Image 1: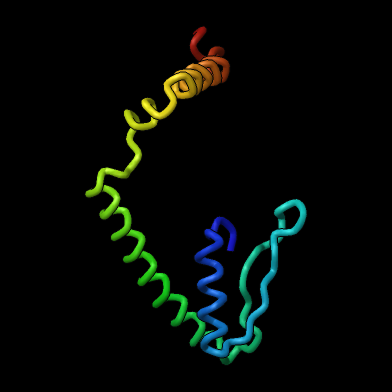
Image 2: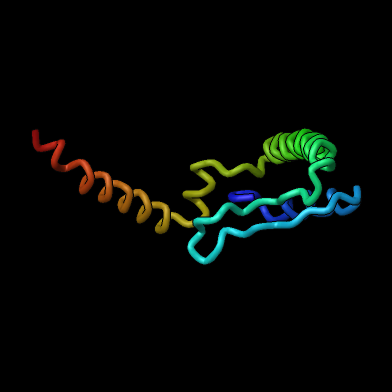
Length: 112
């Protein structure tokens, strides 16, 4: 479950509940060193859970891709120009900060 968007995690939880698959969830803990995941409580339900999740992921992938295509057609995708015009001072400051960090990181190599 690490790096999984909350809406996707909730949809998977709901999917398992709707299909009467008992599961429990582990969390990353205070220092994020544990494995956050969903665990099927009964081994005999594992294959069914795996199939349901695979079908869900195929459907979600298709929905997300279609959403990206729709936003691109409508012109709602972010481009560098749009980001610049939304807040030019922040954009310029970010570029300068990136260049400073790159310089400080690579200055020893640039000397040679």
